[in-house]
Image 1 (cartoon, rainbow, N blue to C red):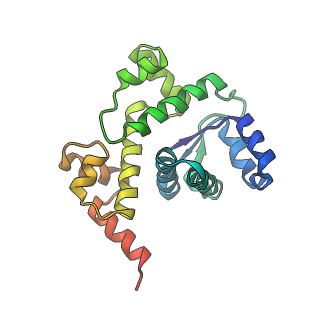
Image 2: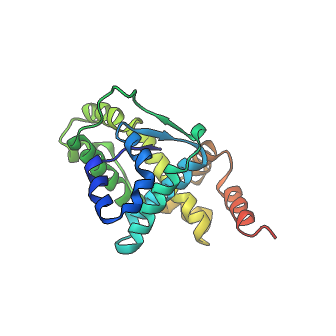
Length: 204
């Protein structure tokens, strides 16, 4: 998972909530991009999915939860994408990435095509592919896959839907492929992931 943000957005929010000063360090580093892996990436991606599916005060809750996760991520689960002397992504570029992520969130249960994303950005597919990777730190296909699987984790943890139903709800049309991609990302099957989470929630 790659995280970037607008510095001006943070300063505007800090005027309203001085408590945000506690996460200023991670946000300053995020201006040039941070890649998160492991548990931090998984839980942060779940909060990102929730942000895309909620509004009002609940969305604010998920935004704050995301900031806490990123701020408290251990050093071995985060690394900068650019050196300190690399200029951060300009506001227009960050806006474009935000728009594309919004497109992915909105269509997480259905078809997500790079051709459609490129059209939104007013670019050719090849130009968009290069731009998105440079701006976000990972390619478009990997971003879609990771967000689909993060949404699957959320459903496995917080719903009683079957694995087959969850497979369809996160945009996979083949259960075997879904299981294979999930295991590749999390080293366990969706069913095993749910069982592990249930044990953690109810250790007795």
